[in-house]
Image (cartoon, rainbow, N blue to C red):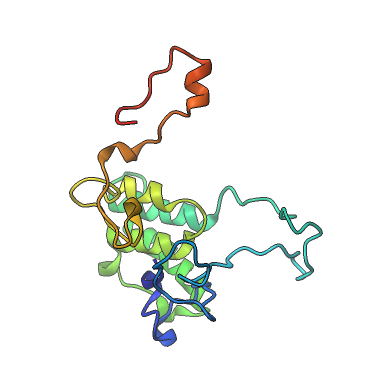
Length: 191
């Protein structure tokens, strides 16, 4: 994921939305039990809008954002690129460039109409929405989580180098606690 923001070894190439803690951390994760393996993501911190620390060290004082304008812009662009009606390419490009202008502070990150592809939008989603719990669903929707076109990454499928996973992982298993209390439920295939 880090590479979606540019070359991790050359900070001059990084998209300004990267919020990675790299000091004393290695890029690669070779041991899941070592905190310093992999870059940390301090995207969300428990401080007030004035920068004062939260009152509880265990739970954040702020609510989790449920809807983001950035997500709506990305959905619009994706719907247009997938052939949806009611939208247009010019507006989609404008929305994507608005996100990038906010991130870059100017129009130096703008893209052209020719660069606005579904793959670009998927990558833009990770740059904008990382650490917000959308990546798995995005990869499923794009047909890249399971199947012949699936992406792999370190530790996917429990393997250091990442492996492809079975199609059953497109859905989750029904929890045993639910199956135990409702005998009418049938476990999802493969679990």
